[in-house]
Length: 447
Image (cartoon, rainbow, N blue to C red; front, top):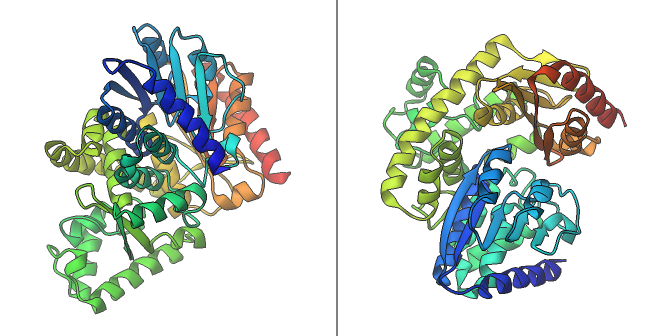
């Protein structure tokens, strides 16, 4: 299967190389960590091959952004970490397009002007075995074999899409092994407590979210005093005894709050330290996600491209972003969620953060009986983000299909993965959306 997808990437690279070196290649990607790293990999590979590029990072839904792209004077456009769900719009554009995507596709056969590379058509599960950045890395290697150093960015993308849950597997695992071999990453088993000091590490911890600790200054101070840990010490500087005590306390916090085993297994695990600002892959993914979802997409892309000034800006952006997420999580802990037969839901203020909050709440606040939906009302539209669990997917849940079905019935847009998806529906159809979605999801899980 891998050989098949490599041959189609070779075809994509030949499509690019058939263009004169003075061609400006348009790059369009998603605005989360996977989308940002996907774009960065492609931009770096193009630049090294002598091509100029113009990159844009888009958020869901992509309608207005794609409309702008269609009016531009482009010769060729590369879409990464998106495109398969928007293929009918892309086919109508009057230039050549290459789609590199891992989301659930709509159709395999495309118009002649579009080359679609979707890993799901090559026996590779796009929810667990490959992300947009991993596929973009294969494209970069097809363009030039010397691009193997970009494997570290690919692993950051996979980390950003949480594909480490249940352990990296499939194409992800293969690229990790390659990156370790070429020394682009280094493996260490440790807990996720980044930051200059342990106080900030605990305060700003949203993923994992430690109930009663994250965002709680008084509780953190009490805990550190009890353990004899100085607020300004960082985790790596602690003695092994204090490290173990703190890790045990945090793990017990998650167990006490009903955190599932597959999520618990992600807390202390093998982590991959990159050659990008010497950051661990999930740590860098969090930083990029903060930039993308707070409206600072350019900073996120610049960080991925190695810009030191942007890195310092990103650190400040991340703290502000996490404060915003913490505020919403603490509110949900107090006020709770609304219940339907097939799912739980809550109303969020911002569609960029709604899905993030839903994902964190699913993993660290709730049991696994139902998926969780975030709903944002904006500009006469409902913006929905859905999050499930691997256990629910095993029981039949397919949120991507559910959002696709309900969107088609209500003339909206929707789709994604079985475990995570989104939709946009007219605000006036809120009641219909809740009723139809409830029936679809309840039937999936029951079935």
